[in-house]
Length: 318
Ligand SMILES: C[S@@+](CC[C@H](N)C(=O)[O-])C[C@H]1O[C@@H](n2cnc3c(N)ncnc32)[C@H](O)[C@@H]1O
Image (spheres, rainbow, N blue to C red):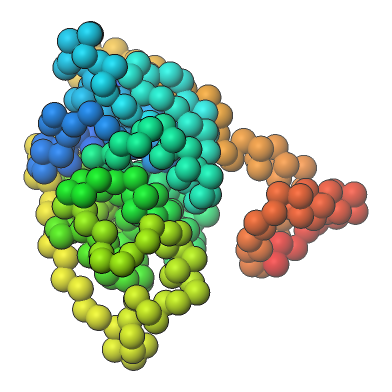
């Protein structure tokens, strides 16, 4: 397979390179913007899970670049990710974990007493290939993004987040409905039909009376009955409208490149990739997949890994 094969198979990947976007994901936010008109006239935005930065590019293009240079300093856009990101004019970067309270505090500090008008989050874990597990972790990222929004979003503000449609999706909708008057699910044509990925577009943020901003994940796990479903056997049914973007281009189709086609390199190579470290480590050992152990503590992982290497034997990760 030549290097142009991905250009044929993925029209949005190709267009991203041609139009200067760092990732094809840019089209997902652009299509949401075309459908819901979320960004016009805004000056304060948070981009969570932002690397390599194509959504931040869209925010800068719509919120920062249209202003005359002397007015641009009133625009505040902050991009947060575990990974480093090449700079984007008009966007401040924070390298941090969105599930940590200190990250919410740093974002609040960035806005210096003001609140954001929109929070967007394209958060996704590195895929394990186990759909249920990936969807679970993605749901936690969505809840983290929502938690941060409860601290920083102004009344009437909007929230856009990736969501994997899986078992507990309807519970996630229930949470979103607690905080937003208008919630719908959006499927851009830049997102493949075959993918469980979709986006929630939630508008008109309003903190419920008596709700103090908090980490919703903790609340979810500690007191699920108080806010998810009162009766386990009879969970609430939540109806959420579904909106699909109907464009001319189909992300599941292969397009001919034509004879004059000139290959273009990606706009920005990732500065760091989360999986690089793991690849380096796993290249030295044999892992027999009998189960997955989730390590929350890096030191523990190091210890466990070192023990495996020292024994110089194959390793059961169970
Ligand atoms: C699909 S990519 C985002 C693409 C980005 N919206 C763009 O347009 O370029 C998902 C990102 O989520 C980030 N991520 C995953 N878990 C995170 C966490 N706990 N805190 C911060 N970022 C996280 C990953 O590092 C990755 O860069």
